[in-house]
Amino acid sequence: MSRSQHSGAGGPSLRLLRVGENIRHAMSAILTRGEVQDPALNTASITVSEVRVSPDLRNATIFVMPLGGDKEGAIVKALNHHATFIRGQLSRSVTMKYMPRLRFLIDESFDEASHIEALLKDPRVVRDLEHDEPQEGDED
Image 1 (tube, one colour):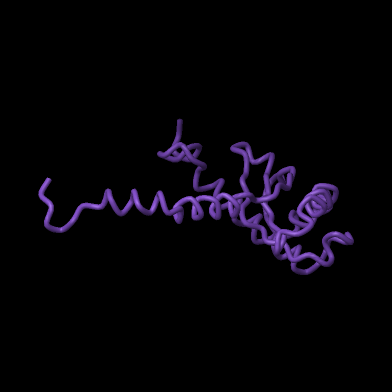
Image 2 (cartoon, rainbow, N blue to C red):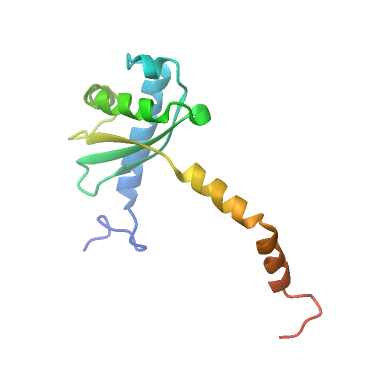
Protein backbone atom coordinates (compact mmCIF):
# COMPACT_ATOMS: atom_id res chain seq x y z
CA MET A 1 0.00 0.00 0.00
CA SER A 2 1.11 3.53 -0.59
CA ARG A 3 2.17 5.86 2.18
CA SER A 4 -0.75 8.19 1.52
CA GLN A 5 -3.29 5.54 2.56
CA HIS A 6 -1.76 4.40 5.84
CA SER A 7 0.72 5.81 8.27
CA GLY A 8 3.50 3.66 9.63
CA ALA A 9 1.89 3.10 13.04
CA GLY A 10 -1.39 1.82 11.61
CA GLY A 11 -3.28 4.97 12.54
CA PRO A 12 -5.03 7.46 10.30
CA SER A 13 -3.03 9.05 7.52
CA LEU A 14 -1.94 12.65 7.64
CA ARG A 15 -4.59 13.48 5.05
CA LEU A 16 -7.38 12.05 7.23
CA LEU A 17 -6.11 13.96 10.25
CA ARG A 18 -5.94 17.20 8.26
CA VAL A 19 -9.49 16.75 6.89
CA GLY A 20 -10.79 15.94 10.37
CA GLU A 21 -9.15 19.02 11.82
CA ASN A 22 -10.59 21.25 9.07
CA ILE A 23 -14.07 19.87 9.73
CA ARG A 24 -13.60 20.34 13.50
CA HIS A 25 -12.69 24.02 13.07
CA ALA A 26 -15.61 24.65 10.72
CA MET A 27 -18.01 22.78 13.01
CA SER A 28 -16.88 24.85 16.00
CA ALA A 29 -17.51 28.03 14.01
CA ILE A 30 -21.01 26.87 13.05
CA LEU A 31 -21.88 26.14 16.68
CA THR A 32 -20.35 29.41 17.89
CA ARG A 33 -22.37 31.46 15.40
CA GLY A 34 -25.55 29.62 16.41
CA GLU A 35 -26.49 28.68 12.85
CA VAL A 36 -28.37 25.56 13.97
CA GLN A 37 -31.80 26.60 15.24
CA ASP A 38 -32.74 24.14 17.96
CA PRO A 39 -33.83 24.87 21.54
CA ALA A 40 -31.45 22.23 22.94
CA LEU A 41 -28.49 23.81 21.15
CA ASN A 42 -29.28 27.51 21.60
CA THR A 43 -28.52 27.57 25.32
CA ALA A 44 -25.68 25.05 25.35
CA SER A 45 -21.97 25.71 25.01
CA ILE A 46 -20.60 22.77 23.04
CA THR A 47 -16.98 21.70 22.59
CA VAL A 48 -16.02 19.82 19.44
CA SER A 49 -13.10 17.76 20.67
CA GLU A 50 -12.34 15.48 17.72
CA VAL A 51 -13.48 14.51 14.23
CA ARG A 52 -12.64 11.06 12.90
CA VAL A 53 -12.99 10.62 9.17
CA SER A 54 -13.31 7.21 7.51
CA PRO A 55 -10.51 6.25 5.09
CA ASP A 56 -12.80 6.76 2.07
CA LEU A 57 -13.79 10.24 3.37
CA ARG A 58 -17.49 9.34 3.17
CA ASN A 59 -18.27 9.30 6.90
CA ALA A 60 -17.20 11.51 9.78
CA THR A 61 -17.77 10.93 13.46
CA ILE A 62 -17.80 14.17 15.42
CA PHE A 63 -17.13 13.92 19.15
CA VAL A 64 -18.78 16.68 21.17
CA MET A 65 -19.08 17.55 24.83
CA PRO A 66 -21.43 20.15 26.27
CA LEU A 67 -19.86 22.48 28.81
CA GLY A 68 -20.69 21.14 32.24
CA GLY A 69 -21.78 17.81 30.79
CA ASP A 70 -25.48 18.63 31.13
CA LYS A 71 -28.16 17.52 28.65
CA GLU A 72 -25.68 15.31 26.75
CA GLY A 73 -28.36 13.05 25.30
CA ALA A 74 -30.58 15.91 24.13
CA ILE A 75 -27.66 17.72 22.51
CA VAL A 76 -26.41 14.68 20.59
CA LYS A 77 -29.96 13.88 19.50
CA ALA A 78 -30.45 17.47 18.26
CA LEU A 79 -27.10 17.49 16.42
CA ASN A 80 -27.85 14.15 14.72
CA HIS A 81 -31.33 15.43 13.81
CA HIS A 82 -29.78 18.50 12.11
CA ALA A 83 -26.83 16.60 10.59
CA THR A 84 -27.97 17.21 7.01
CA PHE A 85 -28.25 20.96 7.58
CA ILE A 86 -24.87 21.05 9.33
CA ARG A 87 -23.34 19.08 6.47
CA GLY A 88 -24.59 21.74 4.05
CA GLN A 89 -23.12 24.51 6.20
CA LEU A 90 -19.80 22.68 6.42
CA SER A 91 -19.66 22.30 2.63
CA ARG A 92 -19.60 26.11 2.37
CA SER A 93 -16.48 26.45 4.50
CA VAL A 94 -14.57 23.19 3.92
CA THR A 95 -13.58 22.52 0.32
CA MET A 96 -13.95 18.84 -0.48
CA LYS A 97 -15.20 16.85 -3.44
CA TYR A 98 -17.72 15.07 -1.19
CA MET A 99 -18.72 16.26 2.25
CA PRO A 100 -18.84 13.21 4.55
CA ARG A 101 -22.02 12.04 6.26
CA LEU A 102 -21.97 13.24 9.84
CA ARG A 103 -22.59 11.32 13.02
CA PHE A 104 -22.36 12.95 16.44
CA LEU A 105 -21.28 11.16 19.62
CA ILE A 106 -20.50 12.24 23.16
CA ASP A 107 -16.76 12.39 23.81
CA GLU A 108 -16.06 10.06 26.71
CA SER A 109 -12.31 10.62 26.75
CA PHE A 110 -12.68 13.23 29.52
CA ASP A 111 -14.41 10.66 31.73
CA GLU A 112 -11.72 8.09 30.93
CA ALA A 113 -8.95 10.56 31.83
CA SER A 114 -10.66 11.36 35.14
CA HIS A 115 -11.04 7.67 35.91
CA ILE A 116 -7.37 6.93 35.17
CA GLU A 117 -6.27 9.92 37.27
CA ALA A 118 -8.40 8.70 40.18
CA LEU A 119 -6.84 5.23 39.87
CA LEU A 120 -3.33 6.68 39.89
CA LYS A 121 -4.12 8.66 43.04
CA ASP A 122 -5.34 5.55 44.88
CA PRO A 123 -3.12 5.05 47.96
CA ARG A 124 -2.37 1.42 47.02
CA VAL A 125 -1.16 2.44 43.55
CA VAL A 126 0.89 5.33 44.94
CA ARG A 127 2.51 2.95 47.44
CA ASP A 128 3.37 0.47 44.67
CA LEU A 129 4.76 3.16 42.41
CA GLU A 130 6.96 4.57 45.19
CA HIS A 131 8.17 1.06 46.06
CA ASP A 132 9.13 0.27 42.45
CA GLU A 133 11.21 3.41 41.87
CA PRO A 134 14.95 2.64 42.09
CA GLN A 135 16.95 4.56 44.65
CA GLU A 136 20.03 6.55 43.60
CA GLY A 137 22.40 4.36 45.61
CA ASP A 138 20.91 1.04 44.41
CA GLU A 139 22.98 -1.05 42.07
CA ASP A 140 21.15 -3.39 39.68
